[in-house]
Amino acid sequence: MFVDFQNQWSPPEPPAPKPAPRQNKRAESITAWIIGFNLVMLLVGPLAGATLFDAVVAMFKH
Image (tube, rainbow, N blue to C red; front, side, top):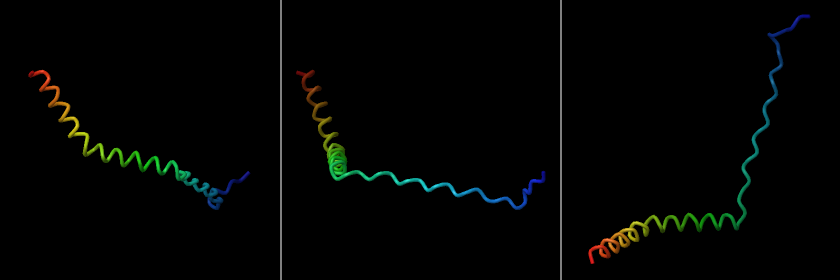
């Protein structure tokens, strides 16, 4: 039997991937609150850490 490799059919196109499901409104709200809290803690955290460090140093000095 003869196999014609010159005029083969091209393989079918793979199916397009499905887009990721979108979050519902409650999940979006929770995500926004978490991001906001993290941004606030990014600014407040170092100040709170320095205050605790000063308190520990003062406690050991006294």
